[in-house]
Image 1 (cartoon, rainbow, N blue to C red):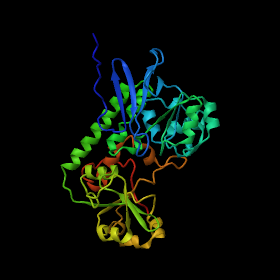
Image 2: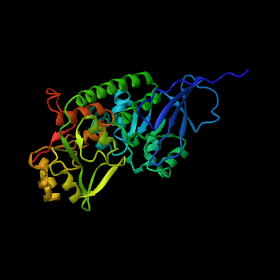
Image 3: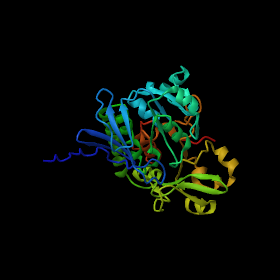
Image 4: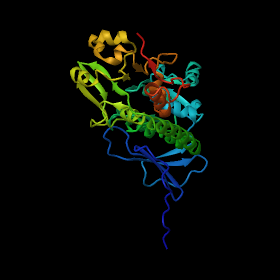
Length: 356
């Protein structure tokens, strides 16, 4: 008589790049989008350190949890780990000057988190000396030589593909990935549920209001090409959920559009708001780049909003670190910009009106 395998339903509702599977007492963490255009699914068997099971016959790797010594490689990982109260488990990080969080900066200043080079070229010698239990990397292809070298040295490596998710809530749900690693799944689920509920409440309030504002985004970043979010991108999803008329909302693509200045001016000259004008932090910078920006109504009316002016103590932009984890606050910022009467007492978390 054979026993029918019982598989618990997945708790992942929005993210497409990973899953947590429980089957007959065996827990697996599946990474389905390790890097762009990845076709391979990476499978990890999760074992409690105090309850190690039988041998692993069919999975890539085993990960013993909870992880006590971890190396992470993106600032987007920091807020999720902090929300789980596990920042003291971080032993190494590349380009740590970009970390804005005061809690983790304190650990860096105290010498508890070691600098391990740059994301693209990790110092493997220093990293191996740290003897982490796990390295959480993000890659652009399977041919990442640094991560391969670390694997060959016997240290577990796992990819985090939060940046590949196509929706704001999909990105935020990767806190459950860290919940598995730190054996704090219930806490991760509870935190995400609050973020999700907050996001949906803001969205509902915005959708019940009048859709009137028109929005322009992006800027010229190189060679007279204007980059702005495509209509199916996660940035465009924020604008859709904020109930505004994003002028390129019907365009195809999940990344960015590369357009000529003339085509953007023709369509966006009269836009009410200009949200996220690339890396520019002031109107002066915009004019130094191209004085034709004055042709836009949003420039003339001082209705340009940027998330790049709020920074941590060492210059890291808070938005780039925290926005992935807190899309509810990003959406609330955008709604505050475009429907100011809906949240009159709310203070911006990320965005500021662009300075002169």
